[in-house]
Image 1 (spheres, rainbow, N blue to C red):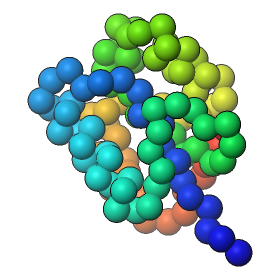
Image 2: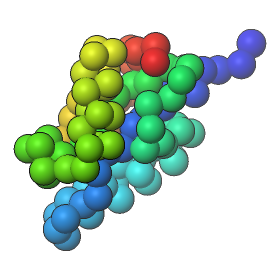
Image 3: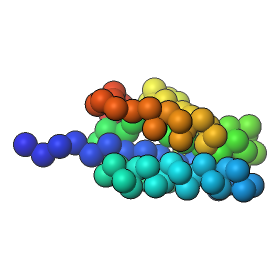
Image 4: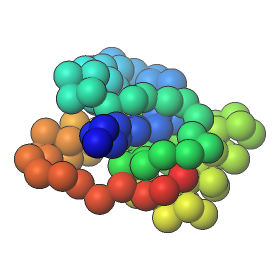
Length: 101
């Protein structure tokens, strides 16, 4: 039996140094734990959550980013801001719930 690979969706582009630092932390954590990172909602598989920049969360984004956020929310996938995501990921010590895409 193959272990399921968790997936993390990243939305946006960090606009300042603090966001870029947290964005890198999220990417590094995901890579270290064998999680797949995507800028799109996968057609299949388990998605743990989505991480978005503050600009995207505030609606200052491209139409494609807005559509992706809409689809994430419609699928019931948890959405986190880039500044809170590193602490949330670091706190994970046991299997976490995922949402089918």
